[in-house]
Length: 365
Image (cartoon, rainbow, N blue to C red):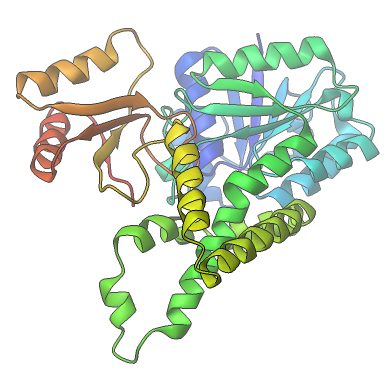
């Protein structure tokens, strides 16, 4: 088991991981670095980290594990600075959503054997240490990547450690990771932002489109409220994979356009039917744009019987639950447990009741 762990970056994800470690492994000493001294002092005052001021980078290089939790480009800079001073048994990991570049840097620095890429699939539109939560990792996928010479025993040990925090570790190849996240995360953000820009530039002088924007448009473009700086960095670092997916999407959009232009009734039915069938097969919250869903989310400790307790509270109030389940990919959605009911009145009464029982409730934005 690790004795000393350092965090370079104590934002939403770094702070949440640190708090989860403090909760599950109180004997591990945690240390932190942040760009602002106020963040360090807040983390210290909450009892998360031991230091209440800035530490030399050399101190982190001596620890058992160093989590790089800054933006992607800064993580690579810190990796380069740490490399010459790393201890013999120090493991370095990161939490960025792009893995290829940082693995290449670790390889060029000669430290790939002790570097493990990490990407917790959890988060929200909020950021900063003050919004961090030890339950953020509960039952969330935590992608782990390694190089060809990564120490197997060290990798297995770190994967087991991540599991003790309540997360679900999944191993994948760095290049496959970047292709997959470009497809299911990065491309949708570009599409969302482009669609928002299209509506903005073509709205009427009295803002009719803005006024009636709801339903499908709101669902599809919700993720455009995420940090512009973060997405700027992601697009720069995963450029090749994103461009490849944008080109593929452009061809798919052209094919759809041709089907509409040719008034191909059978082709249109097939186009939408195949999309519906695949979308309905995904284990995701809700059912997409149509029909409307009445669902909300709450944090839940990963302990036996917790889901049953929530269900019992609602059943006692005669609330009918339509669907209930754990959300494993929560990059942009707060709350580990999704509850769907049949109507708006039931949703409001359920949220009020569970809030009174001490649960933190979140709505999908």
